[in-house]
Amino acid sequence: MAMIALSSRNDMTQALLKQLLDYNPETGVFVWRPRDRSMFKSVRDWRIWNTKYAGEVAGKSAGMRYRQIMIRPHMQPTARQRR
Image (cartoon, rainbow, N blue to C red; front, side, top):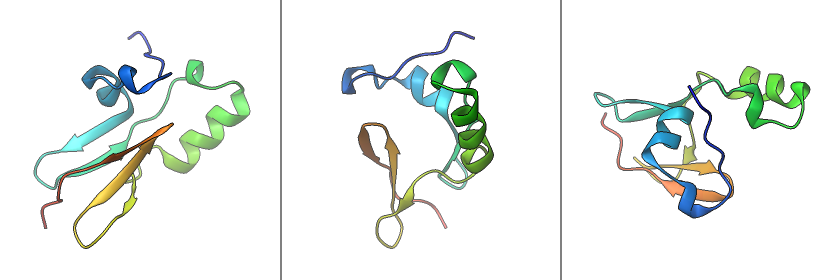
């Protein structure tokens, strides 16, 4: 699969989001997918990112039932999560 680079807000496409995140429609949760080496300047940064974030719930809490996901350089609010 070809990797999509993120350089501006106009690059935020459904294809890019599917490349970066997995979505569970039953829970409403987004999870970080492992990233390709080509998205990083160094092997070290690539390994650190994938070790720390791949497979983890994306974003940070932004209220009782909302999360915000940072996809550099833009913050993307998510819809309410189901409980």
